[in-house]
Length: 123
Image 1: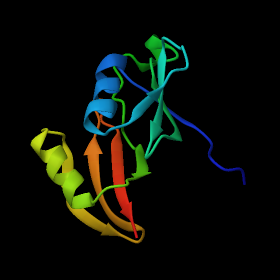
Image 2: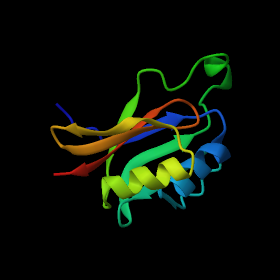
Image 3: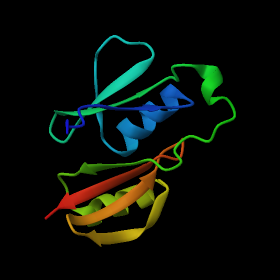
């Protein structure tokens, strides 16, 4: 088996999604000079292996609901309670409340295209 090295989410509005990931979830953009995508750093400047981009083929995604069945998990470097409170105040769509997982406490937020983004404070 090979390891997963990189994930790309195709988004309906690149700038709106960039604002969500940077302003709400504190991702940092790596300047790669690609006008169709944003690649992110996360947690103390580490590369996350994650990007958002304009659709490869606009017609292929036309009238399709993005985000269905996709959930990405990111470890956080802050207290889950603090992050949960901040995101609720900023009116980010949080699914339920803090939950215990086998890996630590987590919350799941919904990005502008309906992708589930789980943020976890590892044990």
